[in-house]
Image (cartoon, rainbow, N blue to C red; front, side):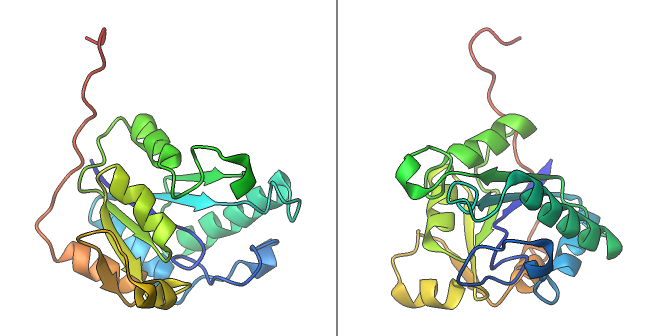
Length: 193
């Protein structure tokens, strides 16, 4: 299976200073949904992994977050793209959970759900914490210049091997120009047959 993991805000849709709090505020970055469609056509399953601390901070509720994600799915499908799953962390930094990036819990949950190892799986983000979470579990880090990406790049300290590209469309072009690499099935746990 070929898998790619994307951050949401700043990668797929425009980032803003406050969390996206309504479907009306969710605006795709030009070319991002078409990039997902191209990845799908090449056999990639696309998964979103997003910190959504606005839930814990009372800025939006689950019904609103679901409506935002429904708009994202509908917009993707309108251009022939399919997002296979959306994983999110609803906690604030004060909750000290293991799923809020840069912690790897959300990515480990993706690996478990899809029953694959994440070594070499492309992970695309616009912030250092996105890249750190993916790097810890073996993902190939891609930093986009959209969202917070330019500032993240300027600060430096990126994980080794990070590729910096202008946007998700450029990441898709780059990945699709590489020899195909599929994610490997996760190793069997003791007691599995």
